[in-house]
Length: 310
Image 1 (tube, rainbow, N blue to C red):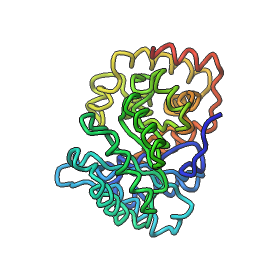
Image 2 (image 1 turned 120 degrees about the vertical axis):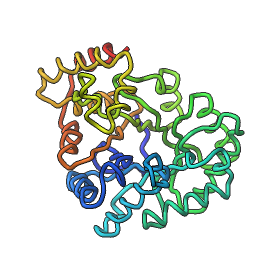
Image 3 (image 1 turned 90 degrees about the vertical axis):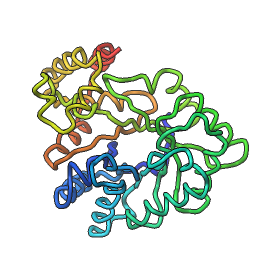
Image 4 (image 1 turned 90 degrees about the horizontal axis):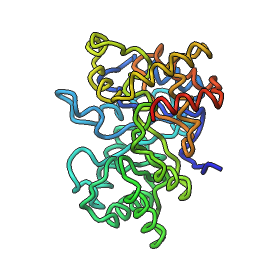
C-alpha cells in the first residue's frame, strides 16, 4: 500500500512551475493555474532556482508568479506547495542557517508562512549526509516546512539520509523527486523503487513528459528547432525515444488518448508513484495533462510501453 502524506491532495497531478516567470508569464500563468484549480488540482511544484537560467533572471520568478496567483485567489489553505533549494550556489546552501534563509526567501515570494514540502534540490556527495538531514530537519522544526524531500539523490544517499534521521529522531525525507519517464528510467531503478516503498516515501517524478518529447510533437530535427524547449526535449529523448513514441502511437490509436495523457497514465501505474509532475505553458496544453486522470491503460498496454523504453 502506498504511503499517504499531507503534502498530497486533489487530483493525482503535481503542476510543474518550472515554466512560470519566463515561458509563461502574467495573465497566462494565472489562466493555467485557474484551470488547474478548477479541475481539482491542488499540488504545485516550484523551486527557488526557477528561472535563473534566463538572461536577466535571478531565480524566484516562478515562486513570485505562483504567489501572485495565491494572493489574488485566496486559496492558499486548499493548495499544497512544494518548493526546493540547493541550486542557487553550492554546498554552502545546506548549512543550517542558509537553508532557513532560503526558505524564508521562498515564503516571501510565495506570500505564505509555510510550504507543505521542501526539497533538497540536489545532492552534494562530498557533504556529510548528517549535515543535510539536520539542516532540513531545522526547516521542519521551524514550522515553516511541513515535510521535506530529496531531489536528484541516488539510492545509497537517500537510504543514509533516512537512516540518520530516524536514528536521531529528526524529520526524515518523505518524498523523492528524480527524473523518470517512459524514455529515461535510470534514476528510479529497482533498488531505488524498493527503497522508496520500504521507507514509506513517495516518488514524484519530474520530466514526466521529457520536456515535451513524449507529447509526440517532436518527430524531426525541424520540430526540435521550433520550440524554446526543443533542445532539452531532444536531449531527454535519448536512444529509446523513437521506439517509445512508436509504442505510444499504437496505444493512442487503441485508446484515443493523447500522447501526454498516455505518458502520465503509465507513470502512475509504477510502484511508489502517486502523481507525476508536469508543466503546461498554456491553458490549452493543460487539457492534455488533465486528460490522463481519465485514461485507463490495460495491463498489456502498460507492458508494451514499459518494454519499449527498456
